[in-house]
Image (cartoon, rainbow, N blue to C red; front, side, top):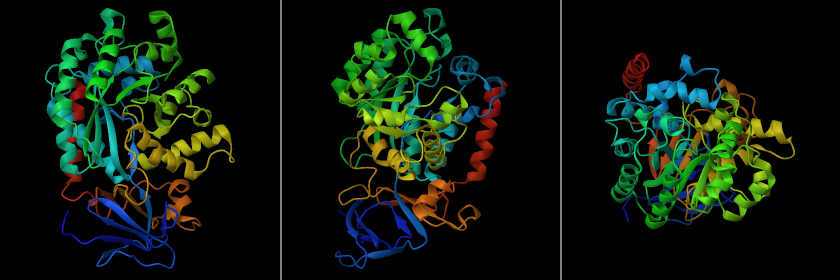
Length: 449
């Protein structure tokens, strides 16, 4: 226990919590008290933070990303293509990554996320060309420097073009190498318990880039090590056709055959599940990361979020890679998910609060962290505070609705585990101009070949 005073986040303009109209009290990285309307903290000797200009949200949680893809945004060779040809255009560029360029790409992605109100993020790193064997270790180092809570997945690909898969030989590894390094990074970095800042999951990339043997062996290893599982599934009709031709079944049947259909697993996209498959997902407690911007940019389709939830499937939000979203802004992703699902289901079925719920409690379920994603006593002190002082908010009525409807995109303050990670709209100690210069230079070098 620390000797620091409890902090009262006092009199927020609005807060996504019931019974906390006068704010919340934090101590040692936890929320210890909600202060109702007309009340004062029961906790003695608090230090107050004036939140009267802030909308206070639980820290947003990003459930799907590829950090390294910040190095290939708006790449002409990959533009205006659907998923499979898009990947084929990008794999050779990604194969030219170096440890230095990866670190810059990761720093840009994590910084963008933090500044958008994200306090916990996943990443799916599955490209391991020669020289990038320490990729997960590099990501852990950046997360610790920035103070961001992470669930990093040790991704993998071992089904290359010569084996009937999509990726070139230069970016895949063999199964033994993948499993050995998966065990290594879990042993070295995975933290357990409600205060964990770094966790590891295992994440073969997709049915069209890994073998059945690797899928099954990874599920067995995740069970042995007690870590979560992640992969892309049901993102495109092409994937359905691939699974039918390669395995004689639909993607979800294949997933179940490989031992993946369980509560340990969360899946990216989930666009092309039928009604029976949604029920099976719900019964298994397998959750879905909805990536609205990526699905629209690649014209993959639209995740049937309301049918999923009616079938008992938990829904989180993911920005996906910056090469398919071209941004890592989680608050903008909340708005995109709201608008996409509102257009699909109508005004009575989807509200701004649903979109915020997906990015908080829903995403917390995806990453297996029930202590995150909610402002309540005992939960983690992970918070995103937004000011409504830009032109886009002028004339707003409901402050909580305004952060979604009017397009909030940059948090004024972000707290992770009770510590300020963003102050006055900036990350303390981060030279953004220098980061942009070095990152842009690395991206140009990679793209030039």
